[in-house]
Amino acid sequence: MPQANVTERQAKYFASMRASLVRDTGKTLEQWVAIARTCPEGGHRARLKWFKDNHGLLQNRASHVLSEAFGSAMSWHEPGKLSEALWTDPASTAIYAAVDRAAQAPGEVIQTARKSYAAWSRKVQFAAARPVKGGKLMLGLALTADARPRLQAPKNESWSERLKSRTLLTAPADVDAEIEALLKAAWERS
Image 1 (cartoon, rainbow, N blue to C red):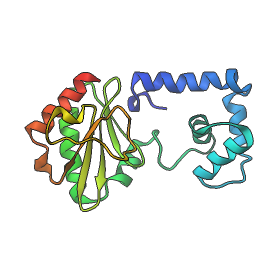
Image 2 (image 1 turned 90 degrees about the horizontal axis):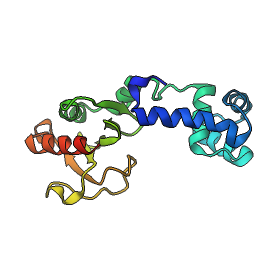
Image 3 (image 1 turned 60 degrees about the vertical axis):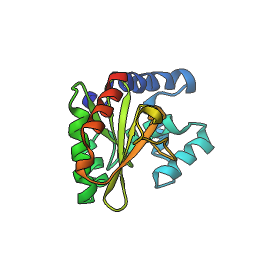
Image 4 (image 1 turned 90 degrees about the vertical axis):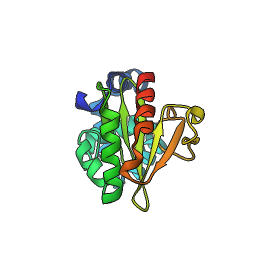
C-alpha cells in the first residue's frame, strides 16, 4: 500500500496485520492468497462470508487477503478512482473542493477516499465528508456536537467513531470561517 495514502498509524496497522497472519493462523499471506483464489464466490461480500464460514478468517484480514489476491478496481491503492466514483454530482463536488481546501490548510494532512466517504487525517482521522442527495455534503468532525450550535451528533455514519459531530453543507459558501475554524480545531486534536 502506498505510504502517501495512509497515516503512520495505519501503515503500522497493515504491517502488523500481515505479520500476525502467520502467528494467529499458521499461514502466510501468500498461502491465504492461494486459498482465496480457490473461492467459488465472485463478489467481495460473498468472498468475505466464504472466508469466515470456511476458514474462520474475519473481515479485516479477509479483506486484506482478497485485496492481495484479486486487487480491486477501487481501493486505497488508487484513491483517485474512489474519489471519482464518490464525487459525481457537480454541486456536492464543488462543496467537497471547498471542504478539502479548508481541511488541507493546516498542513500535515493525509486525504484519502473510501467507497462512501472522503477522510482527512493527521495522525488519526479528524474529518470526513460524504455526498448527500440533492447536491449536498455531510461533514463529520472529531469534535463533540456541543462545540458549536451548527453541529449535531452523527446518526448511522460509516466513518470513524472518532467523528463525534456532523453538519450538513448545502453550498461551497457554507465552508465559511466557522467551518474552517472547526476543521482546524479537529486537526489540532488529531
